[in-house]
Image 1: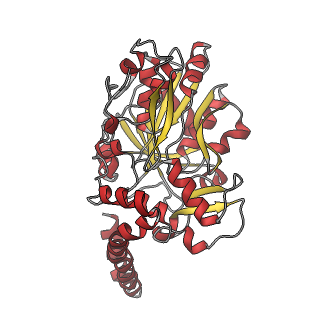
Image 2: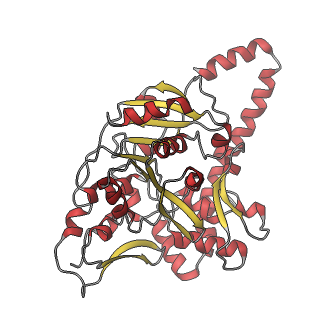
Image 3: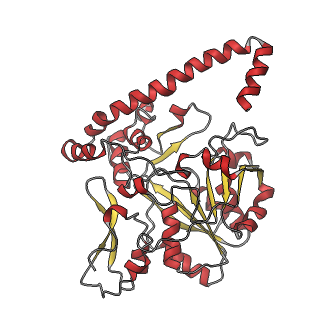
Length: 401
């Protein structure tokens, strides 16, 4: 075997590595941006073509239109505040473990090691919390999932849609004791780029630092960033979106895998039992939104039981599927590839991280013009309107509609 699937379509899901009976496939970082791709050791390969047959690019998994949509937040305040959004994924994980099951999801050992792991103890579920704007290493987790399923364990697997597709392709059949949750994904940068950015921020190479990508209760420009912990003091301004190259390039879509720009899972139909994301664009609701709110899409009939088991731990409200999809661009189409991505990659190879400053300049300028100035004007108008009670009531009615 030489090629499993076209490189520009490869998602790095690792299904091929997990299915290879001879261990002939490794997932290796490729220059220039460090995204992982399968590499075949032809001294071990027996040309069984299992990797080619299992690859979800070659044999796409079926997609389902959502049956129902919900807005939800965790009833546990600490759980809610330590979650990136409304805590729905955290609640589902707790319920599975409470029922004697195991959860597989993305864990950060440190900023250099972000990977999928198996968790079966409540005390360790905190490791799954938090958005991680980087591609997780799957390793041989699919093999572990299959072993648990065959042993009758209740299993919950969370990941990006392409990772869910990779697992389903590897398993080759449906298991009643498996629940899958896909986290709506805008695209994935490589761990190489994340390592380089954190090393630059710290001025050193260490394994003790942890990175967080979001924080609550902040304006949009201060919500996203590379916030470091367990490390020496860094320039806090440089952690923020628009000041931090990595997170700004992520928001611009500049450093995603090539396949992300033609992602077949960026649509309303989904490949998992349940889809979870931020509930962008929600209308008038009884669920509080000031501490984050989760969107839950129920995609299969099987998912009904997990949602019902979780209701007692959630403030949950049924919404329309149409509203849920309309508010999230990634449920409509894939992120558009920036026109200057090719020239950025060429410059990155030639001059390293200085390429970020050159190619993100226009994006930053446009973002500030479209968001910060607009918000400032809106705030002044709202303050003025609030001084006139009758007008403010009209304003609130129009805003809700």
